[in-house]
Length: 365
View 1 (tube, rainbow, N blue to C red):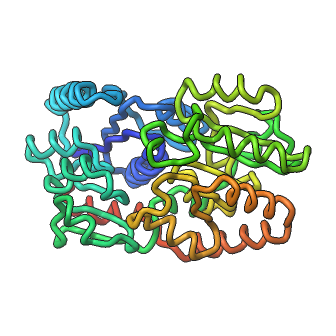
View 2 (view 1 turned 90 degrees about the horizontal axis):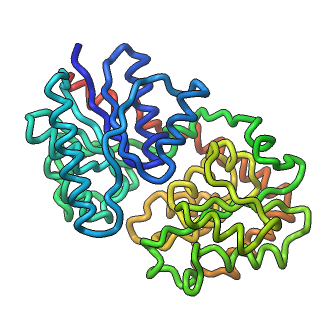
């Protein structure tokens, strides 16, 4: 039986492409799922497998190469070699990734059609290394096709869907009610989640100056201005950020390294995040998102702009504005309920991209 090769590289892709892998498996279509170890993605995938969300088989094939050019190239070459060797014994008819250079290059070299999905043509290197070698490129209808063409996409190969990536796992999402208890959180008390900033983008974030995680200023302001009943949960992005936040704030906040992110954010009252995926995910799940992602006002931040217009997200790089909005929402339960209802209606309206992926991939299997 022929297979669809799916390459997963990040935590977002665990949820996004994991949904696609499970969808194919449920339809009786063979899959070969490879995973690059990066941040907490393998831990999240293991958790989702253990709790029954996913039941497909997967292999870990390599690691992220770090920040140096030499490290990235070395990781790329090693993963390409591993994939090429493993493909010798497999019958793969189509490859699928979210702009995985290794997946696109190996598939192209072996004559396997590669289908790419992307919502971030501003990731220039990944786009240039994948778009020209892809038979089809699938993206949100919010995207500007010219942005894709500038980094190598053939407009005749672009397929759109009427939704955004995160709808794939939020459309019918059911939160795990045990998550709050596992973390020692009281569901009767307000919860604010603060997600740390990636150091890669620190030069674009004025609030990152003189901080180690980019969120110390916003946490300090929340502690000063919010009710003592408010529970502040900080989620680090990299291993070293957790100990820094614990040392800086002690027992005043809860630092969570690994958890079921969507279950936590969906049961929170406000999210303040310096990361794009978690912002869009929270907004769709009905938790108002204050986006302090350095790219939140970028012309290609299609999802953020859309959710801002819908009243579910505020893009800002100003600590005072972010704190003001968080305090306003914490003091307005009716507004929070209104946001939940608005998000639920939007989830019904938006198109799930997973059936679109299946339709496109079916052309090659």
